[in-house]
Image 1 (tube, rainbow, N blue to C red):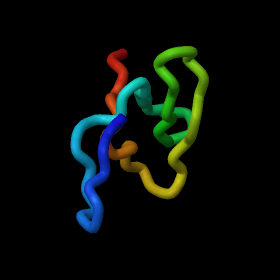
Image 2 (image 1 turned 135 degrees about the vertical axis):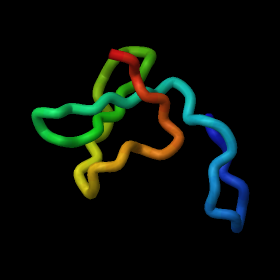
Image 3 (image 1 turned 180 degrees about the vertical axis):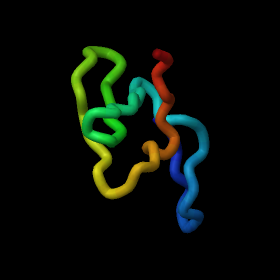
Length: 58
């Protein structure tokens, strides 16, 4: 997992065992667990990808 230093508001390193993919049908980013392939979360607040999560290749 990535580490979050105290009182800094930043992240050191990438989040492991997770990836994200863009869904053009819903116009949102979807976070997925790399181990079992289950979808974990959908980002609907804005059209930006999740921070620190690897993007899947098409």
